[in-house]
Figure 1 (cartoon, rainbow, N blue to C red):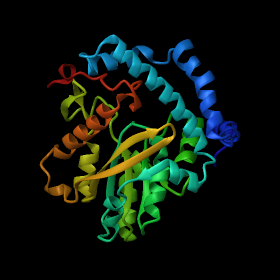
Figure 2 (cartoon, rainbow, N blue to C red):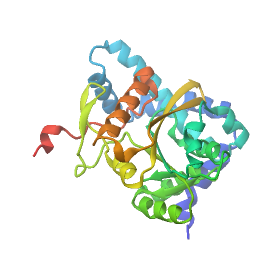
Figure 3 (cartoon, rainbow, N blue to C red):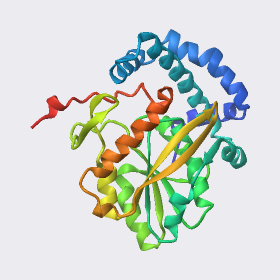
Figure 4 (cartoon, one colour):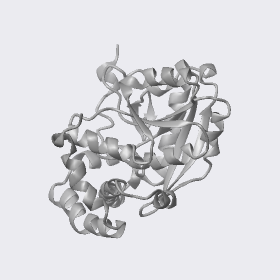
Length: 299
């Protein structure tokens, strides 16, 4: 049973979500951006280091332009996240366009589950809209796989956001139990995973070049696909304009058990990199993505 100490942040932000997005964007421009970027400098050193390592051939002025655009987008994303708490399904559908949802929904006819891989690009908290779109198409059930947050207030807030349009959520450690239950009930599940974060130091199993750097990539999604036989689909997100996004789905495989080891992980890395390079300002550069070095963990 959730108590007030868990819910206070949700109830603080819920009234704010009733404001038009134009008002929230004005707050982002006039207050949030100056505070986060200019006054506090939230992880500014991390962002600059990441951009310098990813784009060493760029001039400082080019990297600075992307840095400033990133922080504007970062602040906007927080406002958009708040707006999710009261956004209508109709407006959500206008703001998140799905180019080819049949790439995912057609697997329902085969009664085959899907692992849907995305990254911290655009506004990944719009995932509930993505699941809403899928659930309209057939008998699939959509779930966002997440790692519970240490802050119970933020954890409750994110749960409310991600279940806003009847999409489900499942803690990472509970995913396999849910897969077994869905199979027993003959329900094809669609599991959304944000898969571009840094693995833990005990899970540095695969390295590749990503954004000009030697990078450890999560292998858990590939292992899960091979164990479950789920199709693997990548969600290529584009920011069309402020507050509007579109997603194009790319099927990596519908026979994961036949794929060579690490091939799906590598293909995800290449697709994610291509998404970022198209417009780098919309990726989460505040994340300490390269905190692990291969030499430190070599056998």
